[in-house]
Image (cartoon, rainbow, N blue to C red; front, side):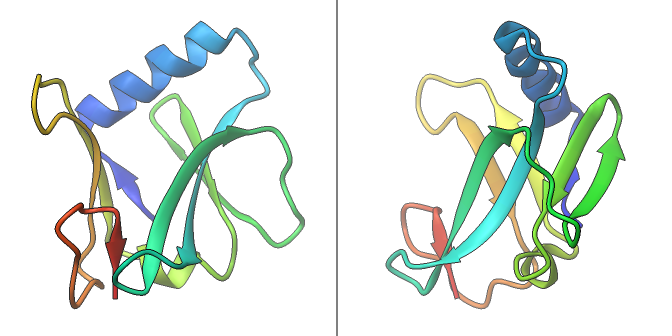
Length: 106
């Protein structure tokens, strides 16, 4: 399962609070595509499948599907508040190669 840095946990919590729906959680997935083979997908969701994998990280509930989970073992989600190069970024030790945009890997 992916972990979240303190900065990412704080930002996700702010975004969830702004949505105003306590049933929302963070879904992190890996999908085929992107310029390197796989791409990350993150969004707020309310639907949990029976085979989903869930974890509580601080006050944040993080859910991933069983196909994505092996790609995210040891990965970490961080958030940087910056004018350039800011936002969410995933550091993934399973990625052998990443593209220049940082959104896809192989």
